Length: 439
Image 1 (cartoon, rainbow, N blue to C red):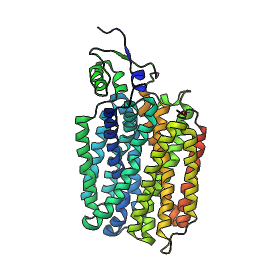
Image 2 (image 1 turned 135 degrees about the vertical axis):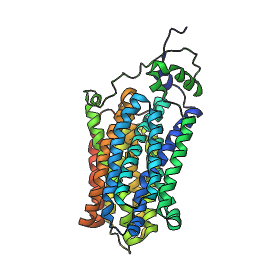
Image 3 (image 1 turned 90 degrees about the vertical axis):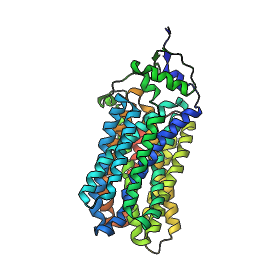
Image 4 (image 1 turned 120 degrees about the vertical axis):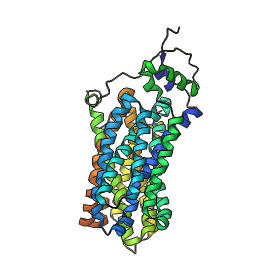
């Protein structure tokens, strides 16, 4: 009989980041690659659908908004589900939901049916990310937590980049329907793989004594020699009831408000670009430049986020994220000062989109790592999920605000909107007290 309980927090936080843990983070990140792909599919398909259905760009705003509302609802619900029933359960369920419903969108011929499907798919798209962030953070030592979460969530712009590239090859040959079919089948296959190979979060399992035998097996798989019959405690994190109300106690209120504000403004900027940059560029510069511009925006985000994750691990999140947010403001203002017409040099425009995307997407990605740092295990998925859900309100507004800005002031107003949103992010990040400390 083992009388001394094992401190799961100390065991994980002070342990090594071995190859099996890296595999688990990779599998978690793989779900977010397809989340990013499926999230972006409608945006890249809109120009082709406009032609096929003889509709204006503005007619798709409600469809884009429906998807964002679904992600908002899904993030909040799945965060609570993840904290109460398990991150693995909520993550795999989310992937199956968005995979199946994205695939079904390949056969629709009605705008409102498409809107309904995008709302339902959005439940899964929104639910995957907070649970992926929580799961990735809880497999690794504390010193690697920001990097693990960043490498997971950076797969959103990576997936969006892949969507932009793949669409350039698939749509001209097979059309937009094949794009949705492909975006449905692949996530379902990934979900089936996760059922077989991805374990539950060890920190979540430690909170449930009836699941300690599974925890022992998971710990052994990552290199910890834990005997059968072990008992567990967590002395590194205080247990907090998994509820939205817990996010507004004195300990977390300021951080919650600042995170929600930063997520709102950053997603307003990100989804303004995701939803409208392709059609903005396609109007004057053609589909090829539109695809390359969006790919540069997202690929820049991948590079920026990865670099940001490494820098945060060394000098902390406050100086790193404030600098990146200020850089995003500068990049968006540069784009607003650039007239977009057939005479605009495509190379310089794509370069500016790459820089601005690097800054904006890096902030969005590292905000997940910051949220995972702020909240303890028992409310981590809830904290991340509700922050992201509130951020989706900004995404919903982007579907209308982007269209209004384009109609009112063209590209100048459009990119000025993005600059203003990132200015709000700077203010919110400066408000926060619980930033990731330097190494």
